[in-house]
Amino acid sequence: MQAVQSPEVNSLAGLSGSSTELPDFTTELYKDAYSRINAIVIEGEQEAHDNYVAIGTLIPDKAEELKKLAKMELKHMRGFTACGKNLGVNADMPFAKEFFSKLHGNFQQALSEGKLTTCFLIQAILIEAFAISAYHVYIRVADPFAKKITEGVVQDEYLHLNYGQEWLKANLSTCKEELMQANKANLPLIRSMLDQVANDAAALSMDKEELMEEFMIAYQDSLTEIGLDNREIARMALAAVV
Amino acid sequence: MFGLIGHSTSFIDARRKALELGYDHIAEGDLDVWCSAPPQLVEHVEVKNPSGKIIQGAYIDSCFVPEMLGRFKTARRKVLNAMELAQKKGINITALGGFTSIIFENFNLLQHQHVRRTTLEWERFTTGNTHTAWVICRQLEINAPKLGIALNKAKVAVVGATGDIGSAVCRWLSARTGVAELLLVARQQEPLVELQKELKGGKIHTLEEALPEADVIVWVASMPRTLEIDSKKLRNPCLMIDGGYPKNLDTKLSGSGVHVLKGGIVEFFADIGWSMMELAEMDKPQREMFACFAEAMLLEFENCHTNFSWGRNNITLEKMDFIGEASIRNGFSTLNLKSQLQAAAA
Image (cartoon, rainbow over all chains, first blue to last red; front, side, top):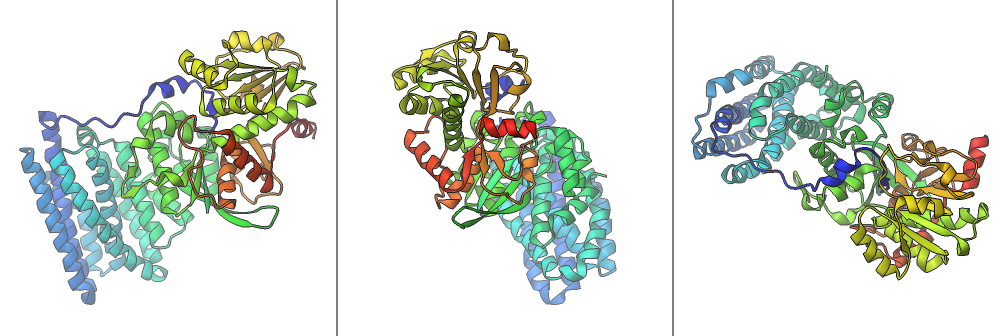
């Protein structure tokens, strides 16, 4: 370490790094935003369930294992439904359906064409990374009940991420090209989904900047895990920016 | 494996470097994109000491840039995420370079030990301050006599005397060098009085009082960019050791009698095949580096996997001796005036 010589030093010295303050969970503003965020989470877990079952139809010998994963997602869905109820919030499910519609469409398209790599990229990399990152940020500002539930969910989600990663890793030599293409088509959707919920997330004290960063960390980690190098990952991540 | 967590000195430099490394997605992004960019392990390096021992290292860019200092949450995340990455990569000992350890200390990040699924193991990290303090002391002992300044007659001002590095420098100077007088300068009075008691000596001065009296000025404090120093009021000769970050004292001073030496910089005996020190604008980027970075290498060479420099005001003379001996044994030397003058002439 060196000592600081900069104009910012005074502001730096004045900050004590206190812990993040929790929002007021009882305001109408909070509950209104929560009705959409909570719905997205519930819908996301439902989609995840359906997607893993669907992927099982493409690899029948793994179907049972995938069904187990899918079942876990339903458990998460019930947990998050309880979180909404606990705060007296009705989840806005039509909003959430619409929110996932493009990604849902792309997944269904890939499924009908038997494109397993694309299916895994959408569900096991993009949606899982999106979910994990949002949960990590949420845990820091959630009400005590939701915090406990979300912490349990995060532990499970890492298993799912690993499952898709393992398959992609084992098949990387043959699936790389499709992976890149699928990423180019779908990563921008994640980016725009994030933009779309930024205001509601902010009402829950979740910074867009932090959400994006957490997503990029989870995304980068899983791509590293499946065996891509820094430059390839950088090229893939570019799709989120341009 | 040792690790270094560093960052670019400005947003412009960061973008240029990212482009060179092929990180187009962030190179082209604005500051908001950088605020959301994860840390990157950008380089692996192998280092061999004079006795042939080889260690492996990694350089992590936290994607922090000084322009983010005003964004408290962002700065905090950058540091914690980079530390998490270092730990996830299994690095034994990582030095927190540049603003990293300053942010860690000032934002009290000790209370943020849990980062996602990772519980940060503090023993894997070091501020590198012990080595920095030792190097600054050695730079003073070696270079003052070269300018005709006899230490036993010299007044040495330590600006930032109560900081982690500053207080260690004061301890060393009063116990080991026999300098005629120590002038203690810092913003807050109370810790200064404490330090004076501990040292059983030294005069508490304001900056204005200290500057015209001092034969040697060791600068390890925060300094506002607006501060003007009138070199005519300094002694001739005057050795000024710039131990601050970033190092910009030389831009504030001119005049034949004032010699500014970059403080806390070491030179390795052989070239290191890395590109990252170019970011830090070292004169010899293949060999020169911040002493705090070198501390992580030393701890790895010595199999001393512990948070050697940690917390504030824990640097003892014994620790400085240990790291100093390790520094010499493993092929490091301090940056000195002579080599700076030669570099300027070349």
